[in-house]
Image (cartoon, rainbow, N blue to C red; front, top):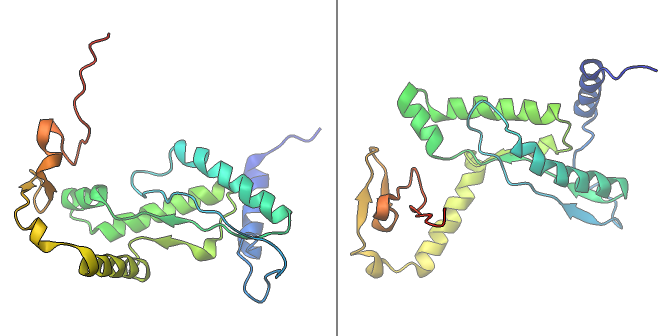
Length: 195
């Protein structure tokens, strides 16, 4: 019996999938018009730290099974991946190291992508996005401005107190500061008297 050697077999298939764009969503011309269309979306990981943790593939495995099953049934499947790349950890890293957040974030995205490909997930790698891409965030900014202009009540907000955190250039509403609750650590203290 031939032993399974992952270092030999898996890179070969991963290269094949990349070269043949195996999991790409069919173009409009290639769509099977009578086939069902399925959109499968995972929560985008936040690209911080040294890479994926065990919780990432745990969640992505279920959607990968759904996507593969739908493809096997002849459905047109859109299964993209993205990275929720804005956030406090990137800002803190930039303050600590002096490195621009985009540099570290892109390095982490590249590493996460490499790891996801090694795990063999069937994402359409032609449709990857990061929330830091201008083509993405310009639309989120636009819709927030539309919402703000159409219903936000500036008169109501005039007297609302804002508290400064010990971190420069960051603010949080006073409600988040009560009872030792901060935006950084979160949560409310809970007494557990039943132990």
